[in-house]
Image (cartoon, rainbow, N blue to C red; front, top):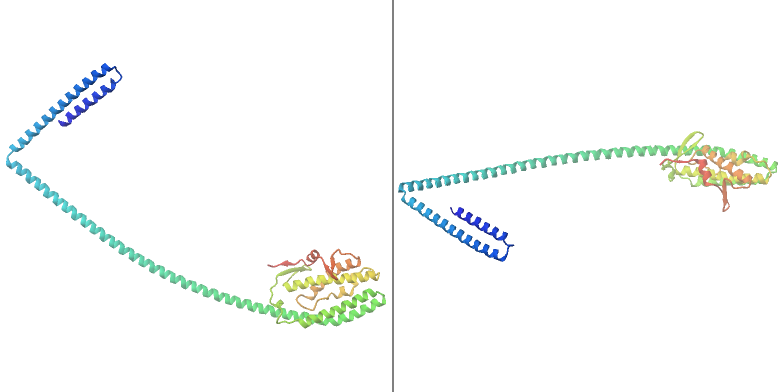
Length: 358
């Protein structure tokens, strides 16, 4: 009933407010009339609300009177019902609490079991990892030991191969020297024969050049033989690092052999230039093949590092070019500096055609 009264009051107030807003634009006389009406409406609403409150109080009073007139048995029964309900509610709350405690205990037990299982699993995992690490270490140690054994075996094989190669090179060098020494007497005999021939032909410039050539040839050979030592020569320990071709075949040599081949070409050019110059001074026909130095081709060679045939070949290649420059009094293949004749580097590379193996 109170709600209805309040609703009516609210509705009345809203209606009055709307009436006041709607009539705000009218004339002053009309505004005064509306204010009077609104005041009367509020008064009527207040009276109606007061009447509703009074009616509600009266209804509540009658209800309490009726309850007081009820028999004691009904009140006692109601009290017992309330007590039973309260006891039942307490029992239910107690059971609910017990259930919650049991659930919490069960959850704690489950967590403990899960933690124990996790610890056991972690322990087994660490044990397996330790075993795997130990096994890997054993495997690595075995692999390292096998690798060291293989390396030692390979080193031993390489050492044996190196020793065998050194022995082969030493034997080869000794054989080269033996063959070259056997030719020394032939060189001397041929030099004497050609010297007599030059004197008969009155080729005195060529005669003097040949005498200088042979004298210098003997000096270089003796100097090499005195200073050579098999035990301290790095040639026998250096691996081949160059390849060159001659006559359709390929040959390998190390740095010492490559240097000797370069020396052969340069010595050949120098001696060829001097021989060609001598023939021009003697007014003799150009013929480098008739020169004693070209036929000998051992100037600067003492039987070391490369075969004699290879040295002779590259000496003659340089000699032919030097002879042409000397006879024609030009420097097409070489140059002259500080009293020495030397072949051009481009020509030298074209003659040797050395290829690096590394």
